[in-house]
Length: 436
Ligand SMILES: Nc1ncnc2c1ncn2[C@@H]1O[C@H](COP(=O)(O)OP(=O)(O)OP(=O)(O)O)[C@@H](O)[C@H]1O
Ligand code: SF4
Ligand SMILES: [Mg+2]
Image (cartoon, rainbow, N blue to C red; front, top):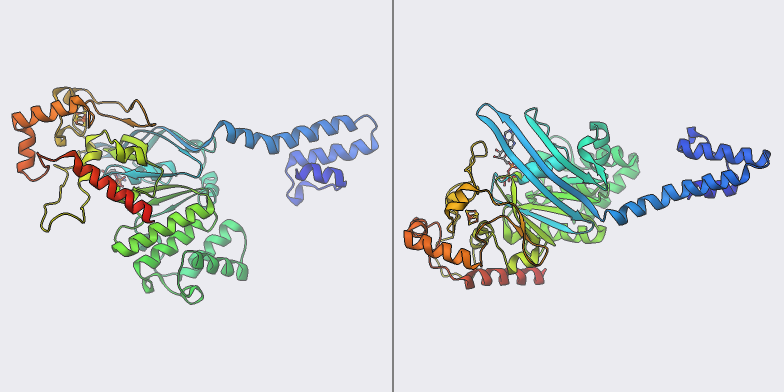
């Protein structure tokens, strides 16, 4: 568009003024056309082609690749003395523009390593990442560090787990914001300060002009996290990763921060990945949920579908682990049996098998792949999915042989649970959504 407008207005920019070389060539040819009869048509054709390339190709690319992010068979392995830690082990997912994906799993399931691998932020010398991460159709794993620096902040940003470690404790928060604005937006001085104060106000920091001069330790935990969100949003990224943004905050502040993120996401039409260990946090705040276990996605579905008809026993266990307000006093929390697996020597077959109340001999031998459910854009990796007659049979068999009872006796699962419990939890979570 710029090129054609300039062409018709008769201006002749040079490469030194920032004009791309193709455009400068076109201008040159256009000038020649005025003096060389016969070149005019050729120039018009070139101009039309260039306009098509600059305007239509990105639009067509968007039409053909509606997903902002497509991750395929992503693996991140760490070489350590004891062997190889398979922290992310074959994750595939896609993220349509404007949607929010929740990544849920226990501590150590690989959520942070996955997010960092997508953003190319895994700096450990012992890490190897393979697979594919396509962002707006471009392969991020092939980009140089310099190319990635242009993408960080401006295209993809991240709010980290702990604001105290992501903010510099000896630099005033105003300076940390203006540095970011100056670096990415090329503005400085008063303009950068005004921009920083606007950002602080947009994340609802009270008295932003005064807070601008505070050090991180002079702010509460919630305010520090707001500053981190302001820094992440400074360059209006299209994709935001929020990695456990409310860990270590009290429940009221957690709620405020999550609402703030949701509002910012809506106002800016951002695509967001919300990482958490709490299924309750993502209910109602996300469009889709991916449940991670031992470096893999074990269940993936639109949020509503997942809560209505979860299929993986691990998702079921996560849902049962959410405390319910209507439970009688001193009710024992339904913790998930056992511990997450050793990622260097994981169990053979299904990695959840040592903790699963439905486990059967097949589970110990064959690892289930992520399989599509018959409806609802839903997939899960389980041979005996929750709600199926096979699962019911497996549960009863385990109960009869004492497997499930042993787990129940240890207080780790409830042998007589009714599915009504799950439905109540899902309904409460859905209500919370409506409140927000
Ligand atoms: N640099 C590293 N070297 C070796 N192992 C690592 C390294 N970084 C992460 N890991 C391992 O990768 C696994 C996944 O870690 P990750 O931080 O992604 O878990 P997480 O799901 O984010 O957990 P949390 O909820 O506690 O944040 C863990 O077992 C962790 O110990
Ligand atoms: S495959 Fe077997 S062990 Fe694994 S989650 Fe399903 S039922 Fe449980
Ligand atoms: Mg983490």
